[in-house]
Length: 319
Image 1 (cartoon, rainbow, N blue to C red):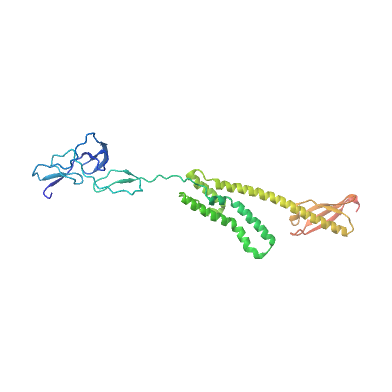
Image 2 (image 1 turned 60 degrees about the vertical axis):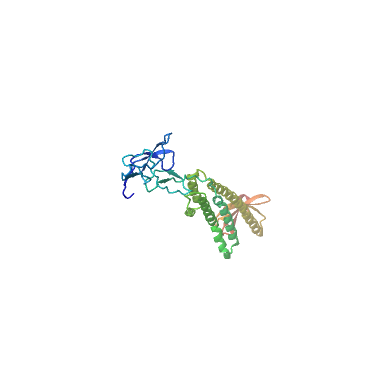
């Protein structure tokens, strides 16, 4: 072939070099993206046509696949296809035309699918943080009643319990969401504003992907409302009970002191929450067997129920 003149195949339709049942257009330099249906009657696949003896010239296809006589191009010439690099098995692809000495593959990114789960155990646990806060509050009250300074670390632990609870389970929630395919997840920094802020941010992130995932937020809101109602109800009942017990103690002490002065009076005081406020005053009624004989004005002087009183006889009683 050293003495032969190399001739590139001219532009024309040839069998698709990738093996497809199509004809592909060779533009004289490289394969193009243009294809056409292959005729029903296929021309023989002879890719080499000998030229006149001693012509000293030969023509080759795009990749030098064979030779043919100069000036007499065989219409059935099949230029050799360049080698195609194999694709990885796990990559989806579509065909893209290729040229000499290289191959083209158009890689199509996998279609992103929405996660099929959204409510994690961690997020549900964060939704119950109000109950943890209630338990911590009850513990703080109990520790305060003990009045022991040696228990200060229990105060700190009880005060931090809701925050530690929400941080631990919010972290688990984020890890679970990552495993389920959520690229955007709420930051733990939202917990600086409280569990409610974190759950709001979480609901927004999850709802952007699956249009669901608000259950933990609603759990937090419902639990907060229930606990608020419970605290108000228990507080009112406990306050009324303590007020009744406090005024009963004031009645007994006032009757005893009046009796020591020679007065056989019965004292009746209203069950008022004023007994818990230092400096507050309220009136009690003093009576004997004949009826009302005077008024006992009580003033709370100390935080432990200490009080002072003044008895004022009724004008009609003549005392």
